[in-house]
Amino acid sequence: MTKKPTINIGIPEDVRKKIAAGLSHLLADSYTLYLMTHNFHWNVKGPMFNTLHVMFMQQYTEQWTALDLIAERIRSLGFPAPGTYKEFSKLASIQEVEGVPAATDMIQHLVDAQEATARTARDLFPLVNDANDQPTADLLTQRLDVHEKTAWMLRSLLEE
Image (cartoon, rainbow, N blue to C red; front, side, top):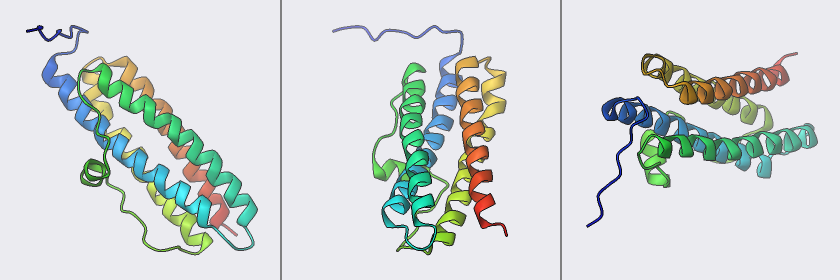
């Protein structure tokens, strides 16, 4: 029988497990946001169609790349990344949107989802900082920058 390799990166296993659990929540929120954004890209209509269709495509493309980065960080910490709708629905703080909302409602849903994802990332910082886990802190900082900037851009579309 092959012995399971140990991980000795300077972060105890119990702390790595907590960080991985927090990142799993971030991955679930990020995947839910990705799916919502892609759905809205497909189904948007009205006077802002072209602007929103293109903007949503840019957003879900960026989000798709981020999913891999978050999942790979979980794996680097030595734990399996969640990867099913069932797991994501248990872990996500974002609720799915039913039906096809009007374009401005889509924008508001995305603002709320971007902000929720930012809160999930930010909530993990104290643990990550205490663990001296710079790679995860860097990932969280990058995600916060994207989600906060995207929320601002989307909110701007709702202003007169």
